[in-house]
Length: 390
Ligand code: DNO
Ligand code: MN
Image (cartoon, rainbow, N blue to C red; front, side, top):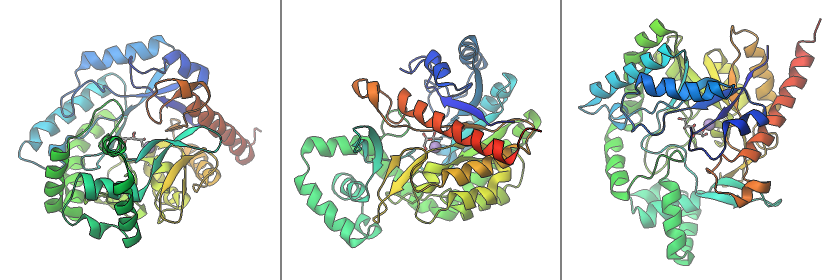
């Protein structure tokens, strides 16, 4: 049994169509109801409608990514119970439609963070890029966070100071928007809101955020067990605390803690190699070997880091992540499962014809098509070697 080849589709407004997805050779769709504001309950009819569109195109909705966790749950604010009830009802509605794998993240305020969405590679393709000094430019000179300088190595602060003087106003504004963007199509957070959230999370801290995650998981596990749902937490991206915000899903210890703290089968992981691989402390193959039993979904992509910890998203099979090692382990785990584990190429480069199009950063068609093609070839090679046909 092979892995399930899947593809993120942002819904009817996605410039990449379901027909394109079929031409890329994926059979599973990863989608979410992005138009529903965070925290609101997903109505049954809306889920059915999205499912109908996907199935009419001859595809299946394999994973729901993400059902966003409202900030009030992450901070365990006074209105937290209301949002938990909405979450449970969304889960019941998804299960009623036959959807069983759910992805979410528990990153405070921001989702994945980059400082450049169009980093030009030598071959002219464009990749997503993360640079600590640019983050520091934002943190120190745009957000002006109290005590921010202590969170960076002195050479990074110095570089940020130099850049803050040479960057144009336009460049600074662009940087600010890129950093304040979470998932594409879900909008930006304002500087005021960000500052306010940072002070709330400062009170909560690392241990507090872990407890809030445990509380969230405990409140939904019953519904998951009754309905055969699997929750998969997406690792922090990048896997470090940034802007003074705590991060609790950044490495092997974090993931093991989460699994043990709420030790129930539906508490699982979305294994994102690019997010984990961006941390110098992480060896994705080793992490997969430690937590593989609870990996129900995988994001496969690569990153290349430099000595300062800056990184760009590299070709899927070339970078710091040993993709062969990851795939080999994933293929092995997959043999132990009743249903194939879905994976998606996660992000891809903006390349070829897509360079002339308006695309969702990281989610243009051709780069992901290339990634998926490479990954399925890798999988087939490994599968045939490990499990030759009798
Ligand atoms: C980053 C991407 C993210 C991810 C969400 C899941 O690696 O995969 O957009 O989908 O954080 O909640
Ligand atoms: Mn990912």
